[in-house]
Length: 200
Image (cartoon, rainbow, N blue to C red; front, top):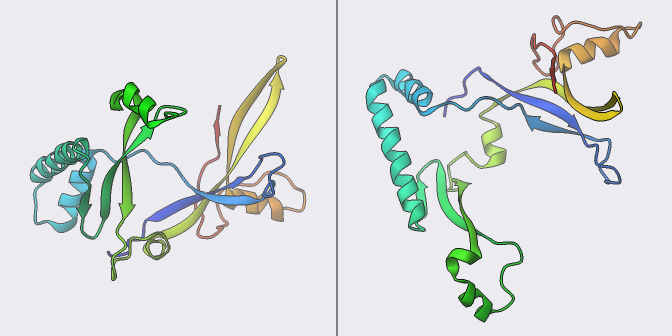
């Protein structure tokens, strides 16, 4: 897989779980993006190789989705070479069953709470889709410092998410006056002009 010069944005989030051994430490998290739709992905694949049309890719992807759902509903895992395996799993109702007799009395439809799709990345020799190897295919770049801020407003506890561009944070830390900075000019791990965001 060719490495494209498109940044994989990574945020920093502080562990605020009180009493945790790791409280106060910072951890990376992937910046969330809106999912690419089937149409968008079909357009991307068609534009990539030039060997298939957008309309053909839409039909192929729609067939793949339909058949994957069918196989999962039969309890049949599906392995896509070079990508990985889609495997169906089941989750139990809380508490499960105390005995085999109880489970049989309940019946399978009452014991199984849900059926899930699980994706297991390809791990065959020569493939590079396992987590540590796949990292080398990504152009990682710092994006935001993500903080959960709690305040009392009109007597009520409110919380919101503050997202500060790490490039701006670095400028503010280097500013002797401690006054605010701008997200432009400095880069942290390849940071760019990312605007600040507050999510209620």
